[in-house]
Length: 94
Image (cartoon, rainbow, N blue to C red; front, side, top):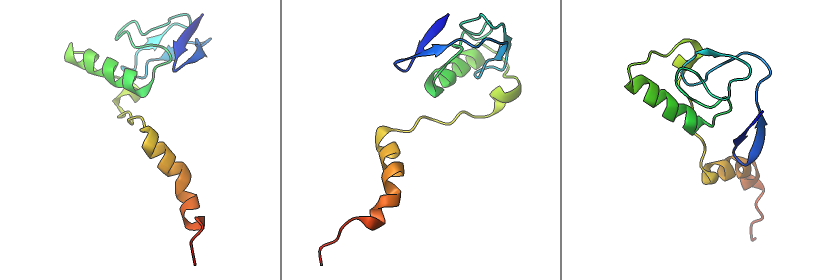
């Protein structure tokens, strides 16, 4: 089984996995979490959305799910991070 994610084919885990949104253990063949319905291969936005829905319904986060998820970088932020080391080498007119 394969799940689509970010334009790539993401392989389903071949082992029992823990949901990144709620912390629930899931079977290897599960494509989504049985407790919060988060995908087995989510982006950070999907994790945050599933976590919000789950806690809004009164669910309680477990284990590693208690750790805050970082937001995704914007394209501009990613470009600046990649270009930052080269800024000092930019040719200057003399």
